[in-house]
Length: 441
Image (cartoon, rainbow, N blue to C red; front, side, top):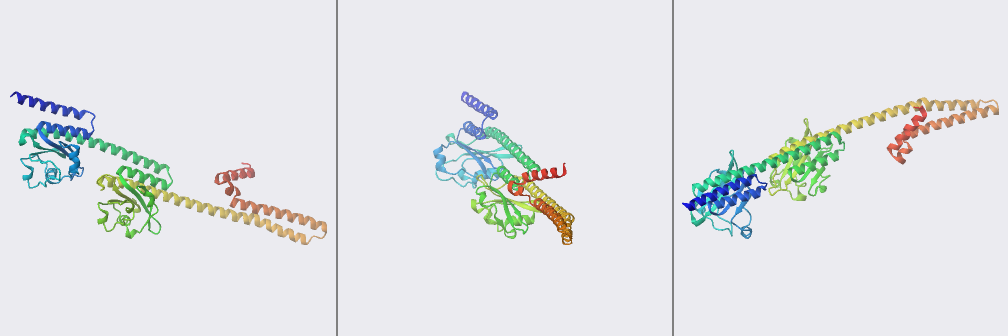
C-alpha cells in the first residue's frame, strides 16, 4: 500500500511539473519533449513518441521520441511520416491499446535496426475537436499491458500538448499576419508614391517570395503582340529568366491569363500545359500561377515555384496571399500605363502647340522680314543715284541681318545648345533667363 502511495505521489508531481512547464518560456520542441518524457515515466514505458500532424491533416510534421539514443535514431534512418498504425491514429481519432503491435492487420512492421516493440498505447492530442497529433507509448515494463489508468494519465498530457501546439500555431499565425500586413502596406505606399514600374514590380516579387517562402517568383506581362515577357523576378537564379519570352498558347502562364483564374500545380511534370522553361534553372517541382486582372482586363501573371520547406507544394493560404499581391501588381501596371499614356498625350499636345507657334512666327515675322528684303532690293534697283543705292543697300543689309537673327532664335528654341551641353535643368534655367530678359518679367 505504501509503494502505491509513493507511485501516486510521483505521478502527481510529474503532472504538476508538466503543467508548470506550459507557462515557462520553452520552445515547442522542448515542451513536447518534456511531455513525452513525462508520459514514459508515468506509464513505465521504455519508448515514447509524439507525432504532430501537419496543417493539412494528412502526415506528421514533427516526431519527437524518447528511449532511442542518437546512434539508434541514426541507424533507423528517416522519421515516420504517418503510415501503418500511426496513420490509422491520424484518421481514427481515438485511444488505441494493443497487446502486440504485430497482431494488428494495420501494422506495416518496422524499418531495419528498429528496436522490437509489442505493447502499445496511442492517445490523440485533441483540443476543442481539433486533432493536433498523437502520443505513442510502447514496451511497458515487465511485459505488462497498458491500463485504463495509463490511458487517462496520457490523455491529460495529450491535452497539455494540444494547448502548447495550438498556442504556438496561433503565435506563428499572428506573426505571419503581421508580416503580410507590413508587406501589403509597403506595396500600397509604393503604389501611391513610386512611378517607376520596374521598381514596383521588383518590390512585389521580393516581398511575396518572403511571405510564401518560395524559391522563385516572377511576373510576366504581355506585350502589344501578346507575347508574355518576364519583367521582374526574385529568388534562385532569378536574373536568368528576366526578359524571357513565353508564347501565350504554349505556356501555363498564358493559359491561366486566358482563363483568368489562378491554379496550383503540385507536380509540374504531370501538367501538360506547363512550360518548364521558367522552372528548369532551379529544377522546380511545383508551381503557383495567378492572373493579374484590373476590372475585366488581364494585365499579367504571377508565377511561383517551390516552397523552400521539405514539402515544396504551395497551400491555399499561399494562393490567397498571391492573389492579393496580384491585385496590387495589376493596379501598378495599369496605373503605369495610364500615366505613360497621359504623358504621351501631353507630349504630343505640346509638340503640336510648338509647331503652330513656329508656323505663326515663320509666317508673321520671318515672312514679313523676307518681303521687306524683296522690297528693299526693288528700291535698290530703282535708285537714281549712287548715294540712294548706298542707303538702299544698307537698309537691305540691316533687314537681312535682323531676319537671320530671327531664324537663329527659332533654331535655338527648337533645340537649345545648352540642352546638349549641360542637360535639361540648366537648359530650362537658361530659357527662363532669356524670357525674363526679353519680357522684363
